[in-house]
Length: 286
Image (cartoon, rainbow, N blue to C red; front, side, top):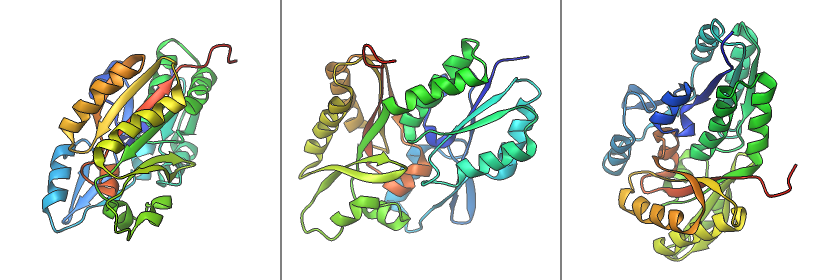
């Protein structure tokens, strides 16, 4: 029987070459815009979404993958794999996790372990990569799940936005709601904790916010080697600037610049930019 199959959703923002290299199966979210549905990352590019957001009067909505999308995939994979590990964006952000669990109960011909990644974007992608690499090394179902559980406490992300308007409209503003209505032009530094948007810090300028992203990551990872990524929503020049500083400041064993998936970007807005990391275990950790 073939190795353990790895499934995730398009919120993971994984670069295409890694998806292909490890045979990861990505179930896309959907965007609905002016009556037309688009599969996230398949039918519409991130650049197109963000540029339309800047210009269009209409507002897109997002939809989680259908139960049938998971059920059909699990059924097909069950003909080839000994088991499936399915890793998804937290339940507080989307019903995708519960949908995957229902599909696993109803349709999967092999054991399926559905895991809450505890985070999103490329930080979620790092969790998925840990699973894929454990599976590629020949790990069984429990060994792959153990690899996932070991890496979740060591991943995270920080981001800053051009405006809080999109989070506010989408109802996902969390602690950042306290900043609405301020007369000051504030730039909050946000992160995810227990699936909710939290405020790590606030700065008075965009450049200060980008610099502070690096400080916040340094506070979490110290001098440990890490996998890192700069992610952005139509902020290419700033992403290049930030990427150079991440690579100069940290011991990056892997590094990627990734586009922020539109299904999340429509809630944070164009200009969102951030850093994500997966730190190695501390020396002496068990």
